[in-house]
Image (cartoon, rainbow, N blue to C red; front, side):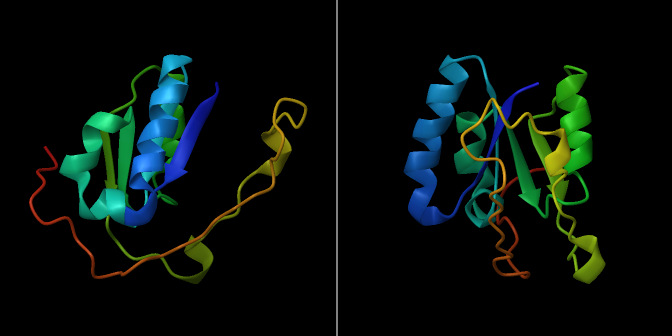
Length: 123
């Protein structure tokens, strides 16, 4: 199961959409999250196969299971703050290092914990 996950800030949104279109053209699922996606979900939702609003740590396993079971939802949502031990490390041992140029890169950003999407419905 290959997929692309993109963390998006406002300054890279256009590039994230380009990346999404290219991987979707190749048949690869693209999931986006990050402060810009959370702040403007309505503007982002049609550019990705799924979006993650808020913190991904507690729902990432569900996203992966849903992808594996062909039941991926369009929106995943967790706006509760995460602190300390709630932040988990990736399982690098499950990645096939021969398939990818880099497999050990992690980018972390919390953005503003008070940022909420203004006008998007989570139905």
